[in-house]
Image 1 (cartoon, one colour):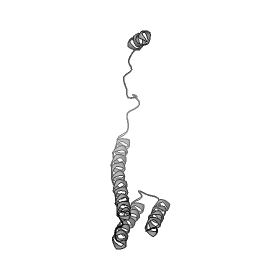
Image 2 (cartoon, rainbow, N blue to C red):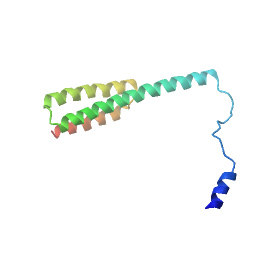
Image 3 (cartoon, rainbow, N blue to C red):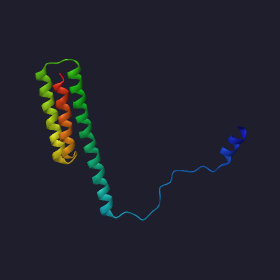
Image 4 (spheres, rainbow, N blue to C red):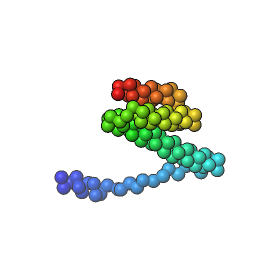
Length: 108
């Protein structure tokens, strides 16, 4: 065990270094910035949709009135449709999500 510690201490420590490649063109740098902005915006939107679905699950588990649940479900449908329109979700994912949510409501 002592030998292993000595071997670990004598081994050279590697630092996390960035690869030094060719510099990026200004258009590539701009594209990186745009992609990062888009990624953050899309992530925020997906998060808000997941939160809305969680609230729907809470409403269902608390046996809230069907009208309140349907009202919340309509707002989730609207969010899903907006996500499809903006390109955050593909159309089939939007349809599948709405269908699964409708099944949850049908169980109530």
